[in-house]
Length: 244
Image (spheres, one colour):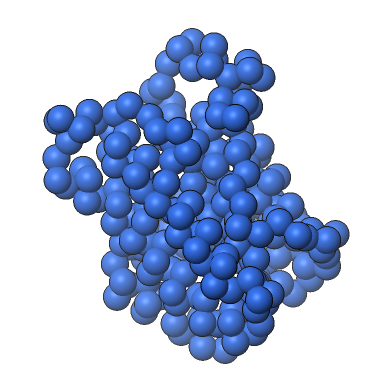
């Protein structure tokens, strides 16, 4: 494994669910964490305390990724003298509805956070990584972005868009020693999926279990910390066989 002492991982959307597990896993691997969140300060502070117990530092700060101005203001001051070694883009929301009933606001809100947010964050960070001539970017997409999901036209569109954006970015920055990859979780047990009936989902999963946030975090950690890395521009499904 590559030494990660003194390295910084920026985890966007790192205070709950999959993001929390990623933050803690990277901290255990030796990264200092820049943890961003939108509004739940209590959850973010709790993760920060856990990271500090592990002997790592954590800078937890809030902004709305869908706002270009807020994102720029929050990141630029930190990026002025420091480039994170890792960017994990995990920010995402869902507003599920059938397309025939979907409102413009449900469409816009999901695209603004899940896809516009990636642009807002990545555009700020990529300049610092290019200057440093190093970096790793991991984008958290979804199986819904690979195979589509009824009732999630907005969510599936945003997550599929992230895959395309990451692949294009990988072609742009690979020669500068910046690796870009995507993880696409399937049915993961989080607050976002708590109302989905498991008995209807399990028959679709060959491993016959739902995933955990730690299942996702372990793959993200590998992509961020493994020294012998020749994975670039790829989508890694973490779905128990739901999508093959």
